[in-house]
Image (cartoon, rainbow, N blue to C red):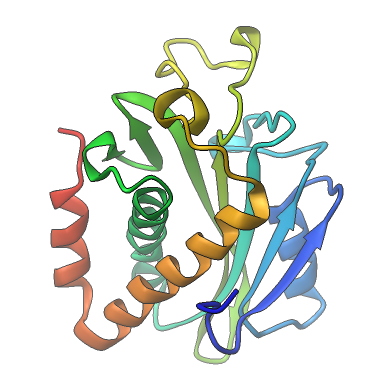
Length: 205
C-alpha cells in the first residue's frame, strides 16, 4: 500500500449486505472522512435503479465514502472521476490500454464486453456539500450467471478471461484507490474540463 492516498481510511470485511449500504450507515452516524469499504462477499449488493448486483467469489466489490464540497451538480462530476480511476487501475493491472473503454453512464468495457460498473449515491449532507457513496463492482475472476443479467445487458467478461491477469480484491483496491484520488485531485485543482476530456478520450463510442 505504498501509494495509498493520504488521509483515506480503509476497512475490509469478509461479508456485508452491501458496501454502499454500509457507507450510508456510516455517513448517517456522522462519519465525514473519506474511506474505502471492501467486502469479499455482499449478500444484498445492488446496481443502478435498485437492481440486484451479483458478486461471485473472487470478484471486487467496494465503496468509496467521499466528502464533496459544492452543489449537487458538482457532486455528480464524481461519476467521471470514478470511471477514470477505475479505467486507469485496470490499465495499471494489465499494462494494456487498448483493452478498456468507458460506456455511459457507469460501465467499463473490456474488448467491448462489460467488465465493471459504478453506482453513485448521495449518502448525506454536510455544511458545505454532500457525502457520496461511490460503489464499484469488477468481474476480476468470473462473471454472473446468465439468469442474473438484465434483459439486453451487455455480455459480461472477467479480467482473467479477457487478459489472463489473476488479481485479488485487495490487490485491486491498492491500484484503484490511488487512481481515483489522482482524478479527484485533478478535478479540484483544474476543474471539470480536463476530466471531461479525459473521459471522452476513453469512451467506447
